[in-house]
Image (cartoon, rainbow, N blue to C red; front, side, top):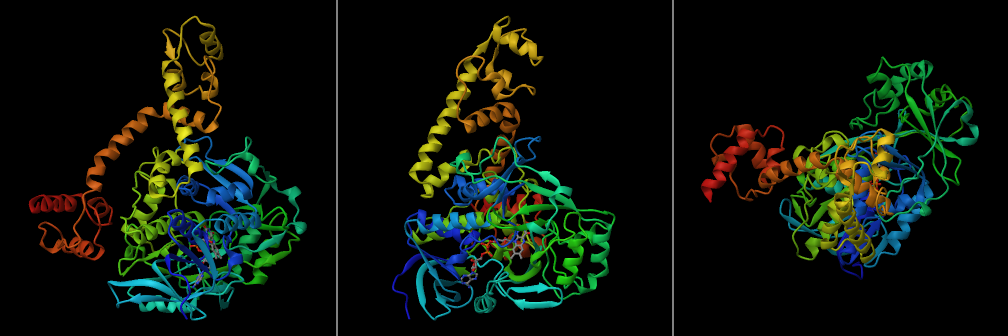
Length: 625
Ligand code: FAD
């Protein structure tokens, strides 16, 4: 039967990509449906209950700057907040929050349920309604497991680890989307009939442990930071629930010996798992094999929530059989009597080569069909949420018959993520790092709103409340920076004496507060109040300080970006025949004819496309025009 309502956008999957996609589409004003297996699992964290971290918090803050939910939910659910790399430069500083799993899910669900223009419906999507055949066909809805046909202009697929999901614990395996959830088999089969390039990846999770059976007294305590950080630009410390400690323990020679002796019972080492796992989040079997010279690895012991006794032992994910998990966990200091509440497991799933996507995340083969999240070969909630927001926005823009939004690499980590995926593809689960961005100094987590909120407002993603707060903050930054530039401290004055006494400045001439702030030993708090009133808003103070201190470097990076942008934006016509361009090798011609990059900038980042090839294309384009 036909579902009674026709939608502009249908989002399949209520995970991290799906919720951000559905919320974004609905915020633009499009009539949106979030179709998911189980409405009670909307916003569930499949693995460790933590948001942010290096490179990832940059994505979370960008999602936030564009009006998304992840950072807001984190502020309501975070039970421990830390700033990583706090002693390093602002480009690599990153906020990480340990979240209460239940509070996080509740916060996301609350945001989703109260979003205007957004309906939720519980069902599995088993099929797509497609007009036409193969390459160039157009999606126009979905079919559920109860044979309901739901029509829409665009569809966003965010099925996570569920497509053809196969769970492994030792040599046992069974179908599943993640522990306790069904896999998505019918949809996987349908997508495999379409012209997409499909592969298999795998990821894993550790056993969970009952806190009552753990001896914390022999572990190192890891408290959260003071002052307490917040994740969202709209967030406040008052929203945070009770804060708790995490702990650190270590594996040892005995742990490694147990694992080594049982490697033949690991499905990965016995060749039962074909999918490739995340390089930067390896299983404990991988760690002791790859880093055989190390006799110990850290284990972060993290609470799963305020009302749960379960602990997440971060660092020992595994697919070994249960008896081996029990034995090696008992060999770890503090875990001697640990009771396992859930065994660790690995999951293998289908993913689609992201090179089959456009930068808008629409597929190149089926019009109006968008892919986001783990199915594009990424790993992590943040990577999924960022793609979801982009795919949901672009699905909505398509429904509204507007041009797609493609975030640039010099504008956002979302731009870096999508550009990396599409130009290079991925053979292993892709996660974000600050090192992936060439314009790190400009793409800081602290300025994500200054980079993106105006764009978000134009796209219809940013509501009035956020826009008003952002506009006020932006103005305060400008006013305060100007005040510091025009407020002078004279030699011999009481203010100069204060700084000279601290040994931080010598006053041979007058200096502005802005000049003083540039000095390495001085911070905003040291100089802003010497004359006049310092900014009360912490975010304003932080911005003014960073902009003053890194002024020269930032200006140089902006100049570089400007030069490259000319390149970047040169469009490559859809029908450009690379075979007729002189001076290109056959390999380059074949790559470009297959991948069909949208701009010269994108072409320049495809592996094997040399600067010489780019100049040949430029010359050809100039001749043509
Ligand atoms: P998911 O969060 O998987 O959400 C998919 C959603 O789609 C679910 O709600 C599901 O019910 C729904 N769905 C699927 N198919 C259908 C359908 N046909 N019809 C309707 N609804 C459907 N990340 C890390 O960063 N580090 C790790 O170490 C790590 N380990 C992991 C270990 C395990 C065992 C698992 C399962 C995941 C792990 N992850 C890890 C990955 C992290 O959970 C994902 O990156 C993230 O959840 C991906 O978000 P997503 O929205 O793409 O998909």
